[in-house]
Image 1 (cartoon, helix red, strand yellow):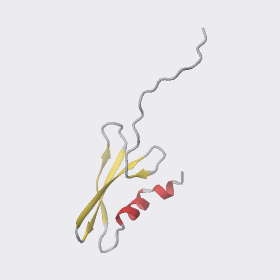
Image 2: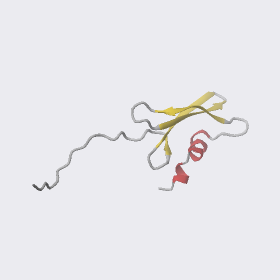
Image 3: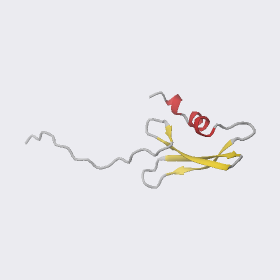
Image 4: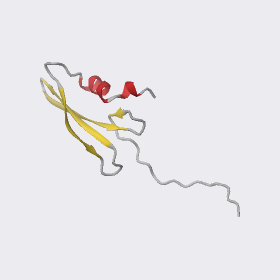
Amino acid sequence: MNTGEKSLHWLVDKWLAPSPAMPAHVTQFSRTHSSRGRYVRVEASRLAGSLAIFFFRHDDGSWCVFPPEIERPAMGVGLRTR
């Protein structure tokens, strides 16, 4: 994956389209409780009010508007030797 296309800056430009007259600001950043993954909340002012979007960091270094899937326990069948 080309992480340049999924950088936080690229996504903020895509989703919020900030401008000098209506800039976007990071208003919150932390880690999720369940997976300890990183997230940021970015807010931009609009004529109709403010708009905020959460962006989540994925294991490959990209940022997305949805959180990464939680790794769940899995079982498998394999050959077992004595």
